[in-house]
Length: 324
Image (cartoon, rainbow, N blue to C red):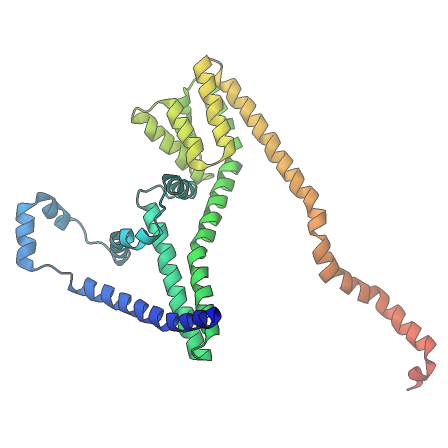
């Protein structure tokens, strides 16, 4: 009985979802087309508000910027059903977005809105396509729900991809950045000036790491303590090596030890770690090659080597077949 009720609900869900999606799109289009103030009201607003007068003198936004502004306006309402209920979940989402490079205040709302929109769009598209092909049935409702689930979790996969790529770029460029920091510090520059020099010199080779050091320099210029800036650098990027580097620099500054020596030791340790990772990947290569060798290379080699011998054996064992 429960299965029958669930099947009926699935069948009814697809046309309701399609109607809701079409209604929302039509409502947004009508709202954008009718959202134009009267000319007299605009002039009165300009005369009463100097900021509006200055904004009118600015160049007009293009279509992409206008769509981004409109999306930012509707993002709070769209993301409200998916907003984390606890502070721990909200901070975890914000940390993931920061590790991916999205640090604005509206980034969590935008991300949750994208998840909701992609889920609804794929639900409507999948349901409409399968209704057109197969007709209205229980299987159509299940496929539509599966499509909506893929649309809901797709942004999570893309976000994880961005996080891994950013961490990998930072990890690869960090030893070179440490070497440059050592050179600058040993040449007589302070740590702040050395970080600024590294940010300038590494813009073309490691842009992500250069941006992170540039943000640290901006925080230092604003008057924040160096220890807090270094701790934020490790937390913001999510890279364990940067966290250890921040702790090392904080301890060297606190106890008055040589910063250049600490940086050199950390640079050597990171190079050894990167070499060990490369050796580990090289050792795994032989194991990873077994499957393609067995499936794609060994059959061809077997046919080339054993094929002529097999033909000759057949001819010797069955001479009647040779006469035919």
